[in-house]
Length: 471
Image (cartoon, rainbow, N blue to C red; front, side, top):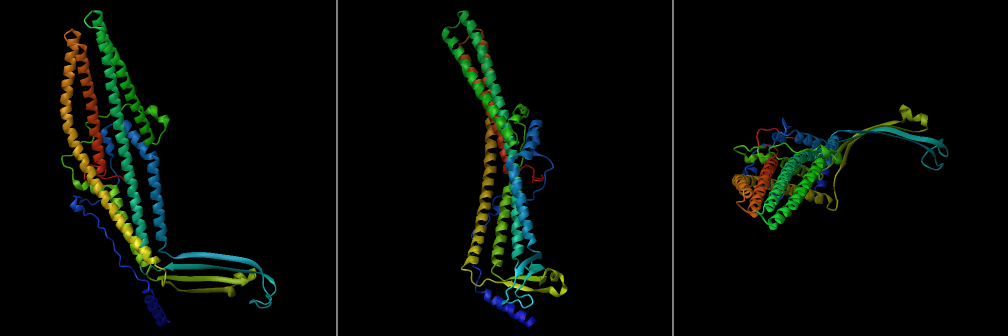
């Protein structure tokens, strides 16, 4: 019997040589992290603190908590994680024996001239069967193991995609909150502009009554007030739109609008940069780690496709009873049992296995290209934000000087106009410059804060190389 089994197995191997594995291999290679300054280990752990706490704003903390708990987009990412975990569990089940129970009972009239002998021939009886069946794929060539590795890598990628979605969502909420600060501040500038122009209008009326100015200056002063009112309404509308955005991000509708108040944060002091920012922080980004896992999943998929060229060896067994007559079905004499190997081998498949193998190899190239694209994009994002932050820092220094000078010039022009020493146009020009400078200051401070948020997102969620990052 052993000789027969060995001979059959050798014949099987010889026959399977008819369907050979293509010599096709991956054509792309992952970008070496060392060439880009990426040397971090890439371990992701749960956070000990939240990065947005650096803004010191309780309302932002509340909005962020609601967003991470209620945002539909993040919920979809978590659903994909659960789906991938279920698929991994299904792949894992393929490594274990499968046992099933089958039973049937049929009322049947047997032919008088058929296979059934007397006394059953020509009569109507119950015929039934029941039994346990066992099947176990022995996975000689590692196909099931490769499929399990592929499923686990895909699950890991989905988990990291969820972490990436969480990070992107927290960044969107923080950026929206800075925009809310910006729009409130610009609305305040517009309000001050309206108040100043109304004040100038009152001064002009008094000067006209005193014969110091003409109707021309009065009409100019009156026309400046509606312009300021339009600017104020535009700024207030921008505030409302930003509130709507924040409510939607936090998973709420119109009922939450009234609860979102003016931010109390100081964007200029939030998220200070360290003196040194290691480039290998980028290697911890969840999207990069997810892309790497997809390369590993594709590699395991190719290994499973290769194993499909070899014999599939199963161990099968059964224990059953079958009988004519329901009462005989459970008697020991009606029983049967058996066990043995079962082989499945490809002999001719019209190129299906080779095509599947080439497709699995192409998936590796696609995954590697996706990884390389993600890494290059991450490096560019971090470099762009660093350059932008440096430029904004320099602009803010110059702009602060310009604002101080404009404020001083406006105060002097207003005092001189009040005393009849200059014209209204001089005051209006000084006022326009100072309000423009105030608006520019708000814009630069807000842009600076958003750039720091974007940089933090670009390096994976923290400026600290030892920080624990969110999953």
